[in-house]
Amino acid sequence: MSDVSEGIDPHAIPSGTGCVECLAAGQWWFHLRRCAKCGHIGCCDTSPNQHATAHFRETGHFIVTSFEPGEDWFWNYGTEKPFYGPRLALPRSRPLDQPSPGPKGRVPADWENHLNE
Image 1 (cartoon, rainbow, N blue to C red):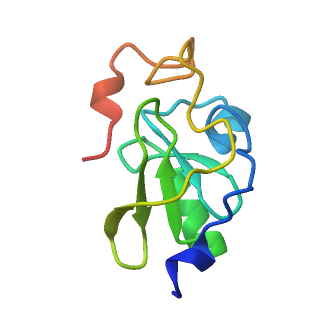
Image 2 (cartoon, rainbow, N blue to C red; image 1 turned 180 degrees about the vertical axis):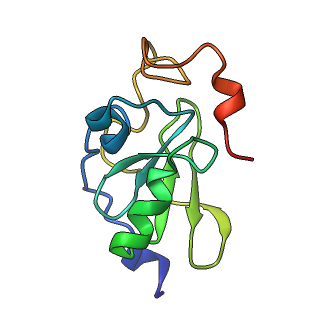
């Protein structure tokens, strides 16, 4: 993996307000991550399906950022280290009225038992 700047496109628009794959499959997520290269929104590694990491493995896009309100950190899958990066295109987080875990109506009552550690 190359220079971090090669892994970030500050103009890429987020693919939506929730995990693309979870929404398509009727599933749920814990927290959301945004690919800094293409804007793909996927669920975090604590989520049952870990779609953000799957996106990295499928595409080689090695930088993600949190898509949670109030969080502005980035993660480099290549170095396995966090860092702070540039401001990305709006929106920078899921909508404030969208719960975490989410989406509303799909989260099981025992959701904590389904999380990855």
